[in-house]
Each structure stands twice: as structure tokens, then as C-alpha cells.
Image (cartoon, rainbow, N blue to C red; front, side, top):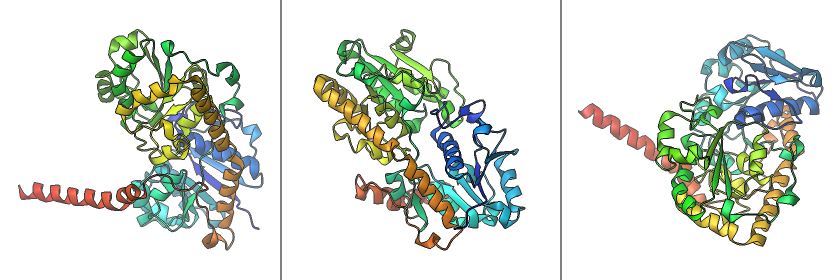
Length: 432
């Protein structure tokens, strides 16, 4: 089978500056999209030494280039310049381009159409409106989804929709101290430690956890809440020092978490952390993550906590369902469910131990998928050099989980209702 000469992977993000990436280390403190994109490039370079992987970025990606002789780096002023150069290249030199939707939406549609026969779009959102808009104008050779729910939510976008799970690596592969055996059944309800891991933006649901804080600290007076993440994960510079988020979002949080709780270190905001976040997670008894699931395509944060033997209380909706389907006892739908679930989880030591062990098992299963994930990417790329593209089937390996009626409503009906609402408002404004 003829192999591809080049695979271009553009990664235009300010958050990767000064960060170092390798296959032996975890996320150094960047967004999941950036981390998994670079991780894919490194993995493909190892698995296919006969391929040339080209990383395109603002100022280069921090990798040990000696370990990856078939990776070359190209510097461009912006992603538009990168695609303009591709358009001026010969079809032989072009190769395949794997680009996230967040990168592609910044590019002129005319430029994308000129290379559409070699372009794979990588979607990272359920009900991906941007991907749908792009696919309406550009005939991508494929659109890749990273989560099961996300795949089905985007099913109407293209008949070349593929499922390739995000790569997840266990923190134990990092040079950090990890001894789960010493932590079994040692939960102390009088000095409970809870961790939140995620960006401090509205879509990640920390405000729901903040709303539950007043009741939590009354029920557990010695409780400490550890908050890992900031708005910087998605390129939004934090505007306050006490809470690393936008000023408006911080003010919403402060309605429920008073400043004195922050000053007394009952609530600790760490900002973004690299592998050192696992040192914090391992000190905690449980995690409370996105209570609504909104915006999630793949449950990276829950899996990172589970990999440390830390049970997760979270939504089982949207992309959170890929992991939380295994924990129906710990599912919440909003802030009003949080206290009850925490009380239930810590009430019985053996039951808590079971949740710890199940958490580890689920994280280990996801981590064990890495080889077949890379093989799926290789199959997808190689299919463009053969006649098998139209026969290629890359569907989810897990069954759909959740309400199909709710899925159809969100995918088919809600967009139409939103369109009608926008048209009605426009008509009313014109009438006046």
C-alpha cells in the first residue's frame, strides 16, 4: 500500500508557548485540544517512521526533536498564511492535513476548498455548530469525533464522520509519587478534601459547584475545596488574582464562595497546573466535575481523577457520559444534587473503596486503548492513498448512552427553534 509522504498538523495556539511535550509526560498545563493534537503528532511519528510529520505553528512546539527525526516544524505568522502556502504547493507535496475545527474556522473558505480533497477536520465539541458550518461549504475528506455522545450528536454533519477516541495516558507513567494502596479506606469526613479540575469558564460548570459550597461547608466544617484550572486554558487571560477567570465570572463565583473562604485557604485556586496537578488530586478524597456536562466531548478531567483512585461526582450527559456511564451512583444533574451524593459517597468505607477501585479500572481501560486509537488514525490517513475511503467504517466502540429523544431534540429541533427565535426578533426590531 502506498504510504503518505506528509501529514501536516497545524497547532496555532498561544497557550503552548514555553511548554514542553513528550510521550513520557502528561499534559504540561494546556488545553486538551492542544495536548492531544501534539500527542497525536508524536505518536504518528513513532508508529510511522516512513511518514514525514509537519507541525505548523506560530513559533515552534517544544519537543525533543532528536527523538523524532521525521517531525519537521514550520513557522507561520498565522494559520491563514499556512493554508495559503499549502494552496500554492503541488498536490504531491501537499499530503494530508489534520486540523482541529478551532483552527479551520480561522481560515478563508476559499483556501480550505482548494485543499479539501486532503483535509481532515477534527471536531472537539458536541453539536459542533462550527464544524457544521464548515462542512456546508467545504467537502472534507473526513470529520473525526473524539467521544461517543459527540459522534452521535454530529451525525448529520457528514457521511464521512469517524470516531477516534482521544488519547488518554495514566498519570502513573509520569515521574510522580503514586501509591494507591496507602490511600485505601482512609477517608476522613472531618477533614474532607474535594477537587475540581477544569477551566474556569461558564461552559465547564464550576459555578454549579460554587452554588453547592454553602451547604457543603456546613455539612463538612473541615472541608477544603481544591480548584485546578483557569480561563487561560482557552486563551482568556484571568482578570483577577483571587480567582483566575474573567472578572464577570469571578463575581458570579463570589456570590457563593466568599473571599474569606479563599483567604483562609478553605477554597484554594491553583490556576493551571502541569503534571504537578496529580500531587493535588492524590491528596483529595473525591472530585466534583462539570455538573451539567455541557461542552464536553471527551471526559479527560474525570479520567485523570479516576486514574488517581479519586471517585468522581459529575454529570453523565454529553461527553461526560463516556466515563460516567460506569458510575450511575455518582451522577448529578446540577448543584442541588451535589451534597446528597457527597454524603452518600463518604458514608460507607467499603462502598467508597469500591468506587476507588472502579475508578482505577475505568481509567486503565481508557488508557489501554492508545494503540488501537493510533491504528485508527493510520487507517484513516492511509485510506486516502487507496480505494478504501468509501468503505472505511470507524464507528464508536461503546454503545450510545443517554436519552436518544433528548439527543434528537438537541440535534434536530433545538437549532430550528433557535432559528425561528432569531428571525422573530429580527422581524420585531424591523417593525419598530
